[in-house]
Image (tube, rainbow, N blue to C red; front, side, top):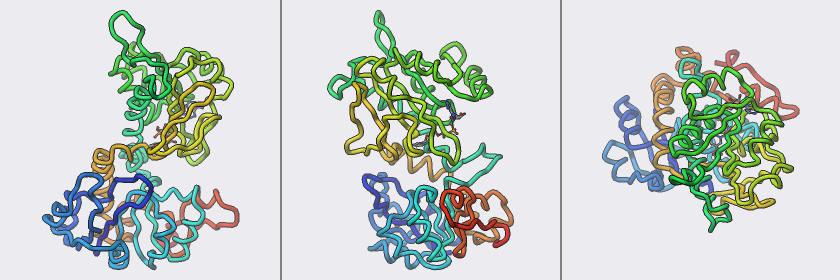
Length: 372
Ligand SMILES: NC(=O)c1ccc[n+]([C@@H]2O[C@H](COP(=O)([O-])OP(=O)(O)OC[C@H]3O[C@@H](n4cnc5c(N)ncnc54)[C@H](O)[C@@H]3O)[C@@H](O)[C@H]2O)c1
């Protein structure tokens, strides 16, 4: 198969869909690989490294799109890329269609086979294996960012997360103990903070209690417990998710005035609308704003801050499914591995992801099993 990879064009996005090691695997499997020149530079992968393992380096993104039967990316295509879609193209990337009607229409009109990382559900790999590495990174980064914005020069209260002997440790409150929350917890505990983690799921709290033991406080997530915990928190991390739905607004505006001025709220759930009533999307080039004395950090693509780690973590997860699709063709890959069906969001002009179809009025859902 002709497999391509282009440079990401989203603002401040430096990840890339294929590493040189990935190219080596595709070439070894007999595929031709086309990489846009400079595609990997933001993640520290130079053109010469791709060339050395057999990639053909291409001057323009258009040539790569036109040549490819399967295109591997990181972020959803932007409007400037829609005219490059062509019928039958397998597009393997994050799509996030439920929040993006124009892109959905463009994929359907061009009859692109849209294979979305975020919906690939593999129970053996623990749920959503192509989303998990980004949640791990965002969770770990959330504590790092919280610690940074506690510094006085950024408007923070001027507290060192770990404290030093003779001073109090900072208090970190984590709302949501899933993938993001658990990774945040790991780093906050490691940095010596005083950590409380809340979830609505009692089995999840039991799991967290088992792995972190007496080093953390687990609490059931409800309005009273959240209000009480955030009052003396230094960092609050928002990491709740109800799959397919907008995040519940559990971090209320009324809490801000009761909190310590200069405390930091990191809303990782911002990509699902945010779990704070005062959350507004921010970007890496201007990541924080202050409301009622509380520093808000609400960047929707946090892993983009560490593109080298993020690219390696993402492609570690995407490679095996990508190779199955390239080696067998999408249809045979589905027939031999049922989980790949769950990633197909658009196929031959039909919308094949139920959650996406339910997000838009007047869009019909077609079960992918009736097409492939
Ligand atoms: N900003 C970014 O760059 C970035 C990166 C990765 C993930 N995310 C987002 O972070 C969020 C969390 O992702 P995840 O992978 O940890 O999801 P997850 O499904 O692993 O965990 C979510 C947890 O939230 C809990 N929850 C649901 N409602 C709750 C409530 N009212 N109170 C407390 N807990 C509640 C669930 O029980 C679950 O344990 C998602 O919105 C995801 O898209 C953002």
